[in-house]
Image (tube, rainbow, N blue to C red):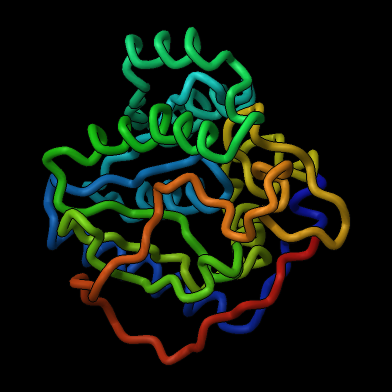
Length: 259
């Protein structure tokens, strides 16, 4: 058994309902946005669960990821594994080559370590701009955000409207880490082997480290920074949602994931 599955996979009461609700949200979103919806996948555990649900439901939801130019080899290899496992093509969206060359020439390849401003500029170039192109022409996107992941995500809704008027759906908002890994173990979902090396949240290679026992889920991201809200800017607060699905009365679960 893998380290991540051994540590995290636990079946909690109500998981069947949470799986059904997530699938219902995805079906509703695919119906309301035919051919205009995408899973913006980080290739993390949550997004692999969503990829599996989309494939099982045979939904017309594209799967795409950001090839930042700084991803771990294991993350890149997962793209091919997912394509083979599910018989899909994963869209790859990369930063603009000219902007990348200019940034590295001006600030160096390790700019992210020198200031928060430079790190955010690097994220903007490698993630935010390619995300804009990923979402161009689409009216909705799906994310793997969960309320348990960090304090900054504690109030993540199932559905909201982003700053550009698109529907943003987070079907796993009320899932725990135990839920995610139990689903992965049960359905043999392919996942990044770096999760077995104590990396619950995986980003670019220079910006990700393993976490220690008791550390917060996202403490391995940009660990040299003191800012409590460690985000790259991909997920910002938005207004009222506009995707409907069967209502749930469960309250947000804010329990920390075991580490």
